[in-house]
Picture (cartoon, rainbow, N blue to C red):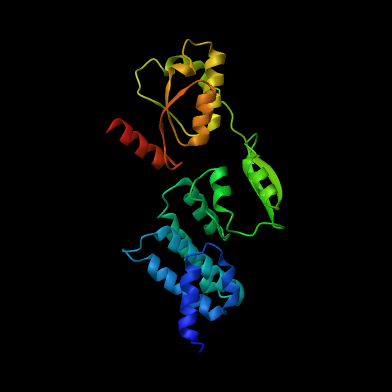
Length: 254
């Protein structure tokens, strides 16, 4: 015997655990509105374990309701939820996701590991073949994500939208940067390591990368350090600034 209320609750409970909001097409606008209200209330509770995720989902639900009904108030609710999400961010990726949501665009997916490898690792649960993607990237960035998506049947176009360059002021200063004692050099990207290596070489200083001890934000950055002969003494488990600080505190027992 079909029990609509009970089965609908089961549908929502299962769907709430999914990052894919395609299930919303199965329900009417009134039910989307009810779910948006519920998500907003839950995200605002002090006891909410993941308020950022809750507010982001609430924003997406309100926008979906506005799309179907043209309700201006739902757009206001969506903007407010995105603003609340921005106050709950714990990583650069979450900050970016909240900014995108605030602009009226829905962030459908945030990987657990903030790298191209992490994104590919978390994507197998989704049907990608035949889908189209644009990768906005740094000029000269690695092609791991692009190649991986191609292998899974996606049509991919990579568009460089910015570049990283060596600051002009670095070369005159690099010779004196390491005069004072320090415990570790923190690096947050592979390009950071590359620029340091280039600057040391151009300045013809006696300081070499293989003489330095590094604290790295993640595996890709650590690989760049080792490629230049450097020694990694700390590597963040989570590739964020917060993760790097936590790793440093643990390593030095601060």
